Length: 596
Image: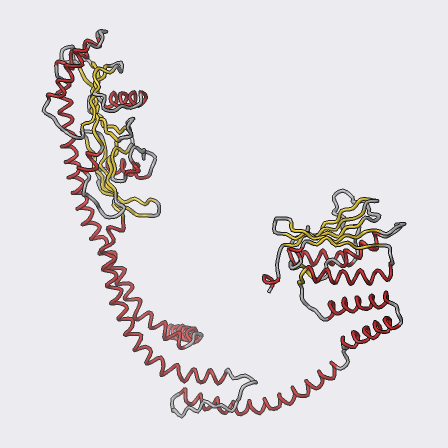
């Protein structure tokens, strides 16, 4: 039973494969044999190399960030030492205590602090300002090099209070549009039991980081190194557009806090569709993060170069496999194509062409069998050709019973000349117009015509109607020359003109004026109006006037406009009793070239 099931399964598989052409089967086998192993090996190598290179680069980047953190700490500690020396100096302590006691700031206080700040052996081009402030915010000493708004000064003091007794590091933008870092410290009395007496703030030029600490350190294009405080404010950055911005609400800062809390210094982040590696260190001395953002492309660059080499090796192997497959492919597919070509011969081709394959394999036997079948089909085709000749004869006989339009036009021309000879110009003109109308209707099959041609047909129609209605109406044309080449559906104006004649002249004691006008509305449309000053009619609320004209002609116009342009509001009819009727058609602009 199991053997029978296996046999049935094998038969189903073979049957399924036989539904696919042989050339496609060979191509599929080629792809599986040559491409699949190469792709699998390449993907595996890409993962292994990427992980290894990622690990090495991440370790190297982490060491670099640690060195930067150490250098930053060394540089900032110089300013801390400067603050510490000033904090315990008698001149500063006495000045702050006297101010706390309510005494005024004397000139001697300021001069003594100035002399002290100059005499301390600390010289740095990045030290830009020194401010000593009492507890109530009153400035005791300010070098006056540059300043900031009062509100920003209050914010600096508030942050210093929060971080005390530790020093704070904050970013400011001064009046002179310069970027500064403020190292702030809360001062305590050395003689009054350690009570707070004021603040000292050292203004450091942000260029210290740009040109010294972060200089010549990069992790590839689009990488960035920045210093961020605990509140998400960017104190310094290689990307100068980020200075002073706050990233507390970004995914980067959230991941930064979470990973540092877990003791992790390296993590990945996806932002703006890019995968970046982030290296971060937390500086306890100043309460800030040193962050390096490395683009993922920088890490995968080496792996991509290895993959390129693998690609060319794979291409060479694929080419070799393709050559071998092509040799076998031609030996099988070439006779099959000859057989298929013979089987695709139609009744209009020469069936005397044979495959003539003398080979003794299965394909040769099949070719000879097909040649025999072709001979039999040739006999059937001869019989079919004879039947087709008889069918054409019957069709010609049927065509002889159809009316020849030229006979009609020749007859109308004869009547026209007869009217001219007998001096009946009205009849002659009417027959000429009727002949032109019939020729345009019967002989021409274009769906769209230029407005100029439609107006010519309309003029012929008015001429014919003049014979019936006499002088009961006159026609006036107000045509914008720019609209003459614009296209519109054939014979959409004649039914409206017919209604203007029939309904406009009804019960009118005198002749009416029918005006045909065309304009461009400036919105990509051509507006055509047929208006008369005839009897008119009442338009009921909620209708568009077309209910009054319920004949076949107007309905035909509405349907044709709907089919051509897809909306129902292309024809608008308005009327008032005793004042006449206006039929307005709105046609989208389409000239002859666009129609072609």
